Image 1 (cartoon, one colour):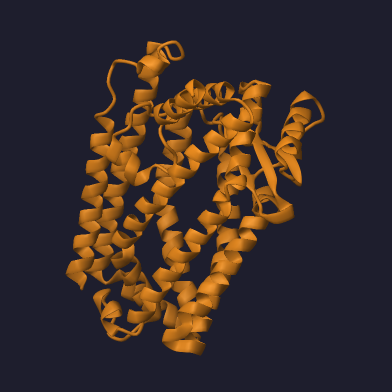
Image 2: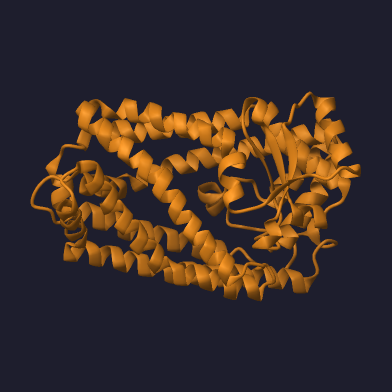
Length: 409
Protein backbone atom coordinates (compact mmCIF):
# COMPACT_ATOMS: atom_id res chain seq x y z
CA UNK A 1 0.00 0.00 0.00
CA UNK A 2 2.93 2.35 0.64
CA UNK A 3 3.93 1.96 -3.00
CA UNK A 4 0.38 2.86 -4.04
CA UNK A 5 0.52 6.03 -1.92
CA UNK A 6 3.88 7.05 -3.38
CA UNK A 7 2.64 6.41 -6.93
CA UNK A 8 -0.48 8.51 -6.27
CA UNK A 9 1.56 11.39 -4.84
CA UNK A 10 4.07 11.45 -7.71
CA UNK A 11 1.41 10.91 -10.40
CA UNK A 12 -0.72 13.74 -8.96
CA UNK A 13 2.29 16.04 -8.90
CA UNK A 14 3.29 15.23 -12.50
CA UNK A 15 -0.29 15.55 -13.69
CA UNK A 16 -0.70 18.95 -12.05
CA UNK A 17 2.60 20.22 -13.40
CA UNK A 18 1.80 19.00 -16.93
CA UNK A 19 -1.68 20.52 -16.97
CA UNK A 20 -0.36 23.86 -15.70
CA UNK A 21 2.43 23.77 -18.29
CA UNK A 22 0.11 23.17 -21.25
CA UNK A 23 -2.22 25.83 -19.86
CA UNK A 24 0.62 28.36 -19.86
CA UNK A 25 1.31 27.56 -23.51
CA UNK A 26 -2.13 28.79 -24.63
CA UNK A 27 -1.05 32.40 -24.22
CA UNK A 28 -0.13 34.10 -27.47
CA UNK A 29 0.72 37.61 -28.59
CA UNK A 30 -2.55 38.19 -30.39
CA UNK A 31 -5.59 39.44 -28.51
CA UNK A 32 -8.93 37.67 -29.10
CA UNK A 33 -10.80 39.76 -31.73
CA UNK A 34 -13.79 40.32 -29.43
CA UNK A 35 -11.55 42.04 -26.86
CA UNK A 36 -9.30 44.12 -29.12
CA UNK A 37 -11.21 47.30 -28.25
CA UNK A 38 -11.14 46.56 -24.52
CA UNK A 39 -7.52 45.54 -23.87
CA UNK A 40 -4.36 47.20 -25.09
CA UNK A 41 -1.20 45.22 -25.80
CA UNK A 42 0.58 46.35 -22.63
CA UNK A 43 -2.28 45.19 -20.44
CA UNK A 44 -2.44 41.87 -22.26
CA UNK A 45 1.30 41.36 -21.77
CA UNK A 46 0.94 42.23 -18.08
CA UNK A 47 -1.74 39.54 -17.68
CA UNK A 48 0.63 36.97 -19.22
CA UNK A 49 3.47 37.97 -16.89
CA UNK A 50 1.14 37.70 -13.90
CA UNK A 51 0.06 34.21 -14.95
CA UNK A 52 3.67 33.07 -15.39
CA UNK A 53 4.69 34.48 -12.01
CA UNK A 54 1.91 32.53 -10.28
CA UNK A 55 2.84 29.39 -12.23
CA UNK A 56 6.50 29.56 -11.12
CA UNK A 57 5.50 29.96 -7.48
CA UNK A 58 3.00 27.11 -7.75
CA UNK A 59 5.65 24.84 -9.27
CA UNK A 60 8.15 25.55 -6.50
CA UNK A 61 5.51 25.15 -3.79
CA UNK A 62 4.09 21.87 -5.08
CA UNK A 63 7.60 20.45 -5.62
CA UNK A 64 8.55 21.24 -2.03
CA UNK A 65 5.26 19.74 -0.78
CA UNK A 66 5.91 16.51 -2.67
CA UNK A 67 9.48 16.22 -1.36
CA UNK A 68 8.37 16.84 2.23
CA UNK A 69 5.56 14.30 1.94
CA UNK A 70 7.96 11.68 0.61
CA UNK A 71 10.40 12.54 3.41
CA UNK A 72 7.66 12.11 6.02
CA UNK A 73 6.66 8.77 4.52
CA UNK A 74 10.20 7.39 4.27
CA UNK A 75 11.24 8.55 7.76
CA UNK A 76 8.11 7.39 9.57
CA UNK A 77 7.41 10.94 10.75
CA UNK A 78 3.64 10.46 10.63
CA UNK A 79 3.97 7.51 13.02
CA UNK A 80 6.22 9.58 15.31
CA UNK A 81 3.60 12.34 15.54
CA UNK A 82 0.94 9.70 16.23
CA UNK A 83 3.06 8.16 18.99
CA UNK A 84 3.64 11.60 20.52
CA UNK A 85 -0.11 12.32 20.49
CA UNK A 86 -0.84 8.99 22.23
CA UNK A 87 1.66 9.87 24.96
CA UNK A 88 -0.19 13.11 25.65
CA UNK A 89 -3.56 11.51 26.34
CA UNK A 90 -5.28 8.16 26.57
CA UNK A 91 -8.45 9.61 25.01
CA UNK A 92 -8.84 8.81 21.31
CA UNK A 93 -10.53 12.13 20.60
CA UNK A 94 -7.65 14.13 22.10
CA UNK A 95 -5.07 11.96 20.33
CA UNK A 96 -6.69 12.50 16.93
CA UNK A 97 -7.11 16.26 17.43
CA UNK A 98 -3.47 16.61 18.51
CA UNK A 99 -2.25 14.54 15.54
CA UNK A 100 -4.07 16.58 12.89
CA UNK A 101 -3.53 19.85 14.77
CA UNK A 102 0.25 19.41 14.72
CA UNK A 103 0.29 18.38 11.05
CA UNK A 104 -1.96 21.30 10.07
CA UNK A 105 0.23 23.77 11.98
CA UNK A 106 3.46 22.41 10.49
CA UNK A 107 1.93 22.46 6.99
CA UNK A 108 0.76 26.05 7.38
CA UNK A 109 4.14 27.21 8.70
CA UNK A 110 5.91 25.57 5.75
CA UNK A 111 3.48 27.16 3.30
CA UNK A 112 3.65 30.59 4.93
CA UNK A 113 6.73 31.83 3.00
CA UNK A 114 4.89 31.09 -0.24
CA UNK A 115 1.77 32.92 0.96
CA UNK A 116 3.89 35.90 2.01
CA UNK A 117 5.74 35.92 -1.32
CA UNK A 118 2.52 35.71 -3.31
CA UNK A 119 0.84 38.50 -1.31
CA UNK A 120 3.69 40.94 -0.82
CA UNK A 121 5.76 40.28 -3.95
CA UNK A 122 3.59 38.97 -6.80
CA UNK A 123 0.30 40.65 -5.86
CA UNK A 124 2.18 43.81 -4.93
CA UNK A 125 4.16 43.83 -8.18
CA UNK A 126 1.00 43.64 -10.28
CA UNK A 127 -0.93 46.23 -8.28
CA UNK A 128 -3.37 44.00 -6.40
CA UNK A 129 -2.12 43.87 -2.83
CA UNK A 130 -3.57 46.26 -0.27
CA UNK A 131 -2.92 44.05 2.74
CA UNK A 132 -0.44 44.91 5.47
CA UNK A 133 1.82 42.60 7.44
CA UNK A 134 -0.42 43.16 10.47
CA UNK A 135 -3.57 42.22 8.52
CA UNK A 136 -1.86 39.16 7.06
CA UNK A 137 -0.84 37.74 10.44
CA UNK A 138 -4.10 38.71 12.13
CA UNK A 139 -5.90 36.73 9.42
CA UNK A 140 -3.61 33.80 10.21
CA UNK A 141 -4.35 34.04 13.92
CA UNK A 142 -8.11 34.25 13.35
CA UNK A 143 -7.88 31.32 10.93
CA UNK A 144 -6.13 29.22 13.59
CA UNK A 145 -8.83 30.04 16.15
CA UNK A 146 -11.62 29.24 13.69
CA UNK A 147 -9.95 26.00 12.61
CA UNK A 148 -9.46 24.96 16.23
CA UNK A 149 -13.05 25.69 17.20
CA UNK A 150 -14.91 24.52 14.10
CA UNK A 151 -12.49 21.94 12.72
CA UNK A 152 -11.64 20.58 16.14
CA UNK A 153 -15.31 20.23 17.06
CA UNK A 154 -16.15 18.38 13.84
CA UNK A 155 -13.16 16.08 14.25
CA UNK A 156 -14.13 15.37 17.86
CA UNK A 157 -17.68 14.46 16.78
CA UNK A 158 -16.28 12.26 14.02
CA UNK A 159 -14.15 10.27 16.47
CA UNK A 160 -16.96 10.13 19.03
CA UNK A 161 -19.34 8.62 16.47
CA UNK A 162 -16.68 6.07 15.54
CA UNK A 163 -16.22 5.08 19.18
CA UNK A 164 -19.98 4.66 19.63
CA UNK A 165 -21.02 3.06 16.33
CA UNK A 166 -17.87 1.48 14.87
CA UNK A 167 -18.10 0.92 11.12
CA UNK A 168 -21.66 2.30 11.10
CA UNK A 169 -20.40 5.68 12.26
CA UNK A 170 -20.37 7.06 8.74
CA UNK A 171 -24.06 7.87 8.34
CA UNK A 172 -24.24 9.58 11.75
CA UNK A 173 -21.16 11.62 10.86
CA UNK A 174 -22.65 12.36 7.45
CA UNK A 175 -25.86 13.75 8.94
CA UNK A 176 -23.92 15.84 11.45
CA UNK A 177 -21.48 17.27 8.90
CA UNK A 178 -24.37 18.00 6.52
CA UNK A 179 -26.19 19.85 9.30
CA UNK A 180 -23.13 21.96 10.07
CA UNK A 181 -22.67 22.69 6.35
CA UNK A 182 -26.25 23.94 6.14
CA UNK A 183 -25.74 26.19 9.15
CA UNK A 184 -22.57 27.62 7.64
CA UNK A 185 -24.39 28.22 4.33
CA UNK A 186 -27.15 30.07 6.15
CA UNK A 187 -25.09 32.10 8.59
CA UNK A 188 -21.62 32.45 7.02
CA UNK A 189 -22.16 36.14 6.29
CA UNK A 190 -23.43 36.80 9.82
CA UNK A 191 -21.10 34.63 11.89
CA UNK A 192 -17.81 33.97 10.12
CA UNK A 193 -17.19 36.68 7.52
CA UNK A 194 -17.29 39.57 10.07
CA UNK A 195 -14.24 37.99 11.76
CA UNK A 196 -12.19 38.95 8.71
CA UNK A 197 -14.05 41.77 6.95
CA UNK A 198 -16.31 44.67 7.79
CA UNK A 199 -19.81 44.44 6.33
CA UNK A 200 -21.84 47.62 6.02
CA UNK A 201 -25.38 48.04 4.68
CA UNK A 202 -25.34 49.49 1.18
CA UNK A 203 -26.05 53.23 1.64
CA UNK A 204 -29.30 54.75 0.46
CA UNK A 205 -29.05 56.15 -3.04
CA UNK A 206 -29.46 55.30 -6.71
CA UNK A 207 -27.60 51.99 -6.55
CA UNK A 208 -29.54 50.64 -3.56
CA UNK A 209 -32.84 51.77 -5.08
CA UNK A 210 -32.05 50.15 -8.43
CA UNK A 211 -31.03 46.88 -6.78
CA UNK A 212 -34.13 46.82 -4.57
CA UNK A 213 -36.37 47.61 -7.55
CA UNK A 214 -34.86 44.70 -9.46
CA UNK A 215 -35.41 42.33 -6.51
CA UNK A 216 -39.05 43.36 -6.29
CA UNK A 217 -39.47 42.91 -10.03
CA UNK A 218 -38.28 39.29 -9.97
CA UNK A 219 -39.80 38.42 -6.60
CA UNK A 220 -36.53 37.93 -4.75
CA UNK A 221 -36.66 38.66 -1.03
CA UNK A 222 -33.25 39.64 0.31
CA UNK A 223 -32.57 40.29 3.99
CA UNK A 224 -30.16 43.08 3.14
CA UNK A 225 -27.58 44.38 0.70
CA UNK A 226 -24.06 44.72 2.06
CA UNK A 227 -20.78 46.31 1.06
CA UNK A 228 -17.63 44.42 2.11
CA UNK A 229 -14.27 46.12 2.57
CA UNK A 230 -12.49 43.87 0.08
CA UNK A 231 -10.06 46.74 -0.59
CA UNK A 232 -8.58 46.00 2.85
CA UNK A 233 -6.62 43.17 1.26
CA UNK A 234 -6.81 43.42 -2.54
CA UNK A 235 -7.90 45.61 -5.41
CA UNK A 236 -9.66 42.61 -7.00
CA UNK A 237 -13.45 42.80 -7.10
CA UNK A 238 -16.21 40.30 -6.55
CA UNK A 239 -19.80 39.78 -5.37
CA UNK A 240 -21.57 36.81 -3.86
CA UNK A 241 -24.90 35.55 -2.62
CA UNK A 242 -25.12 34.01 0.84
CA UNK A 243 -27.78 32.32 2.92
CA UNK A 244 -30.88 30.22 2.52
CA UNK A 245 -34.53 30.92 3.28
CA UNK A 246 -35.21 34.33 4.89
CA UNK A 247 -31.52 34.96 5.62
CA UNK A 248 -30.49 35.63 2.02
CA UNK A 249 -27.92 38.37 1.58
CA UNK A 250 -26.11 39.92 -1.38
CA UNK A 251 -22.57 41.13 -0.68
CA UNK A 252 -20.76 43.52 -3.03
CA UNK A 253 -17.05 44.24 -2.66
CA UNK A 254 -16.31 47.96 -2.31
CA UNK A 255 -13.81 47.55 -5.15
CA UNK A 256 -16.63 46.27 -7.37
CA UNK A 257 -18.73 49.36 -6.65
CA UNK A 258 -15.76 51.64 -7.35
CA UNK A 259 -15.10 50.23 -10.82
CA UNK A 260 -18.55 49.50 -12.27
CA UNK A 261 -21.56 51.47 -13.43
CA UNK A 262 -24.96 51.09 -11.79
CA UNK A 263 -26.27 49.06 -14.73
CA UNK A 264 -23.29 46.71 -14.49
CA UNK A 265 -23.82 46.26 -10.75
CA UNK A 266 -27.51 45.49 -11.25
CA UNK A 267 -26.52 42.94 -13.90
CA UNK A 268 -24.02 41.33 -11.51
CA UNK A 269 -26.70 41.10 -8.83
CA UNK A 270 -29.16 39.69 -11.38
CA UNK A 271 -26.63 36.94 -12.05
CA UNK A 272 -26.44 36.15 -8.30
CA UNK A 273 -30.24 36.17 -8.04
CA UNK A 274 -30.28 33.80 -11.01
CA UNK A 275 -28.34 31.25 -8.95
CA UNK A 276 -31.07 31.34 -6.31
CA UNK A 277 -33.98 31.28 -8.74
CA UNK A 278 -32.48 28.32 -10.59
CA UNK A 279 -31.89 26.57 -7.23
CA UNK A 280 -28.15 26.35 -7.88
CA UNK A 281 -27.21 27.11 -4.27
CA UNK A 282 -29.32 24.27 -2.91
CA UNK A 283 -28.16 21.98 -5.69
CA UNK A 284 -24.46 22.51 -4.94
CA UNK A 285 -25.01 22.05 -1.19
CA UNK A 286 -26.81 18.78 -1.96
CA UNK A 287 -24.03 17.64 -4.31
CA UNK A 288 -21.44 18.44 -1.64
CA UNK A 289 -23.42 16.38 0.87
CA UNK A 290 -23.55 13.42 -1.52
CA UNK A 291 -19.81 13.56 -2.06
CA UNK A 292 -19.19 13.70 1.69
CA UNK A 293 -21.51 10.74 2.26
CA UNK A 294 -19.78 8.74 -0.47
CA UNK A 295 -16.34 9.44 1.02
CA UNK A 296 -17.44 8.52 4.55
CA UNK A 297 -19.16 5.32 3.37
CA UNK A 298 -16.01 4.29 1.52
CA UNK A 299 -13.83 5.12 4.51
CA UNK A 300 -16.06 3.06 6.81
CA UNK A 301 -15.21 -0.03 4.73
CA UNK A 302 -11.49 0.27 5.44
CA UNK A 303 -11.33 2.21 8.71
CA UNK A 304 -10.39 -0.85 10.80
CA UNK A 305 -7.82 -2.14 8.32
CA UNK A 306 -4.49 -2.08 10.21
CA UNK A 307 -2.62 -1.92 6.91
CA UNK A 308 -3.54 1.79 6.60
CA UNK A 309 -1.65 2.67 9.77
CA UNK A 310 1.19 0.24 9.03
CA UNK A 311 1.71 1.95 5.69
CA UNK A 312 2.64 5.15 7.51
CA UNK A 313 5.09 3.39 9.80
CA UNK A 314 2.98 2.41 12.83
CA UNK A 315 3.31 -0.95 14.56
CA UNK A 316 -0.31 -0.98 15.70
CA UNK A 317 -3.65 0.27 14.29
CA UNK A 318 -4.31 4.00 14.56
CA UNK A 319 -7.43 5.92 13.61
CA UNK A 320 -5.49 9.12 12.85
CA UNK A 321 -2.95 7.36 10.63
CA UNK A 322 -5.73 5.44 8.92
CA UNK A 323 -7.52 8.71 8.13
CA UNK A 324 -4.28 10.20 6.81
CA UNK A 325 -3.50 7.25 4.55
CA UNK A 326 -7.09 7.09 3.29
CA UNK A 327 -7.04 10.82 2.44
CA UNK A 328 -4.05 10.27 0.14
CA UNK A 329 -5.51 7.13 -1.46
CA UNK A 330 -8.84 8.92 -1.98
CA UNK A 331 -7.30 11.93 -3.76
CA UNK A 332 -7.74 10.52 -7.32
CA UNK A 333 -11.43 9.90 -6.55
CA UNK A 334 -11.69 13.43 -5.18
CA UNK A 335 -10.16 14.81 -8.38
CA UNK A 336 -12.65 12.89 -10.54
CA UNK A 337 -15.60 14.08 -8.46
CA UNK A 338 -14.22 17.62 -8.60
CA UNK A 339 -14.19 17.52 -12.40
CA UNK A 340 -17.85 16.51 -12.42
CA UNK A 341 -18.75 19.16 -9.85
CA UNK A 342 -16.94 21.86 -11.84
CA UNK A 343 -18.82 20.82 -14.99
CA UNK A 344 -22.11 21.25 -13.12
CA UNK A 345 -20.93 24.58 -11.71
CA UNK A 346 -20.04 25.89 -15.19
CA UNK A 347 -23.51 24.88 -16.41
CA UNK A 348 -25.00 26.81 -13.50
CA UNK A 349 -23.00 29.91 -14.43
CA UNK A 350 -24.36 29.85 -17.97
CA UNK A 351 -27.89 29.57 -16.60
CA UNK A 352 -27.34 32.45 -14.16
CA UNK A 353 -25.96 34.60 -17.00
CA UNK A 354 -29.02 33.77 -19.11
CA UNK A 355 -31.33 34.65 -16.22
CA UNK A 356 -29.62 38.02 -15.75
CA UNK A 357 -29.84 38.73 -19.49
CA UNK A 358 -33.54 37.83 -19.69
CA UNK A 359 -34.65 39.66 -16.53
CA UNK A 360 -32.37 42.67 -16.96
CA UNK A 361 -29.95 43.20 -19.86
CA UNK A 362 -27.11 41.24 -21.41
CA UNK A 363 -24.89 44.16 -22.46
CA UNK A 364 -24.06 45.53 -18.98
CA UNK A 365 -23.36 42.00 -17.75
CA UNK A 366 -20.94 41.52 -20.65
CA UNK A 367 -19.24 44.82 -19.82
CA UNK A 368 -18.99 43.81 -16.15
CA UNK A 369 -17.44 40.44 -17.04
CA UNK A 370 -14.90 42.14 -19.32
CA UNK A 371 -13.93 44.61 -16.59
CA UNK A 372 -13.58 41.88 -13.97
CA UNK A 373 -11.37 39.82 -16.26
CA UNK A 374 -9.35 42.88 -17.24
CA UNK A 375 -8.88 44.15 -13.69
CA UNK A 376 -8.00 40.69 -12.33
CA UNK A 377 -5.52 39.98 -15.16
CA UNK A 378 -7.32 36.74 -15.96
CA UNK A 379 -6.09 34.23 -18.52
CA UNK A 380 -8.21 35.03 -21.57
CA UNK A 381 -7.51 31.78 -23.43
CA UNK A 382 -6.85 28.95 -20.95
CA UNK A 383 -6.31 25.42 -22.20
CA UNK A 384 -9.63 23.59 -22.63
CA UNK A 385 -8.50 20.62 -20.53
CA UNK A 386 -7.35 22.91 -17.74
CA UNK A 387 -10.78 24.54 -17.83
CA UNK A 388 -12.56 21.17 -17.69
CA UNK A 389 -10.50 20.03 -14.72
CA UNK A 390 -10.12 23.14 -12.57
CA UNK A 391 -12.54 25.89 -13.66
CA UNK A 392 -15.80 26.28 -11.74
CA UNK A 393 -16.77 29.11 -14.14
CA UNK A 394 -16.72 29.18 -17.95
CA UNK A 395 -14.02 31.34 -19.50
CA UNK A 396 -14.72 34.96 -20.33
CA UNK A 397 -14.89 34.27 -24.08
CA UNK A 398 -17.28 31.36 -23.54
CA UNK A 399 -19.63 33.50 -21.43
CA UNK A 400 -19.48 36.41 -23.86
CA UNK A 401 -20.24 34.03 -26.72
CA UNK A 402 -23.37 32.69 -25.02
CA UNK A 403 -24.61 36.17 -24.10
CA UNK A 404 -24.00 37.40 -27.66
CA UNK A 405 -26.18 34.57 -28.99
CA UNK A 406 -28.95 35.64 -26.59
CA UNK A 407 -28.78 39.21 -27.90
CA UNK A 408 -29.08 38.02 -31.50
CA UNK A 409 -32.06 35.75 -30.80
